[in-house]
Length: 123
Length: 161
Image (cartoon, rainbow over all chains, first blue to last red; front, side, top):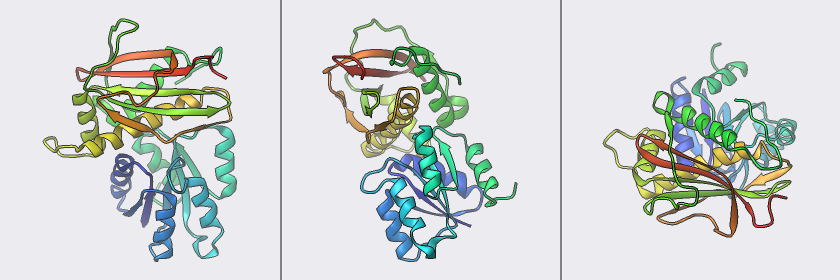
């Protein structure tokens, strides 16, 4: 399995990388949505993207809408990992194509549980 | 964590609960934050790191975090999983402290009338990362591993909208 971690914080990318690497995921990273899209277009296509919402250049919501607009990327699972906890925004992200939503701060178990629910790691 | 907001300003105990949740998620067993008695109008340590994020929309205000230099570097070392003797750069610390205020600010925003948006964090070393042209709404002063930590919520002079 491959995971792409999309967050403007190196510290948060490091935390998420350690969690998913512990599940034997290969990881790639991007500091905003545009950089992530560039990687997808270059052929770095993961099984799952962990996506922050508030980022410079391109936010996570825009990234999700861009991914969902491209049929070639329909198999990518999208999981928001963000401080954005307003119900309205959660509904908006899920409607745009996010499969799961995790609100920061999170425990490692919360990430593992969500990945399990998505069928990406053994339950 | 159960938190209730009244009168459009977060309660101090709610901000404390959010801060403790963030510390616990990041640090696990080393997360113990100890209350610190500080006179109401005292300024923070001169060599501190400071970060701020602005909430705009249904509610208007600024959430800030200030950390002593040593505490900021230790926290960064943990967040980046650097070796115990590894040295976090200033850029690393700015990134980590920015993410801290992002997490605390985002959760404070969740308590307040919306819809609203959260700005990207501003971070500074040795000075405040936020305008003093605001009114303090609530503040928690803590110590983590003997280093000072302050989380504050500020509102515009005319009060929260």
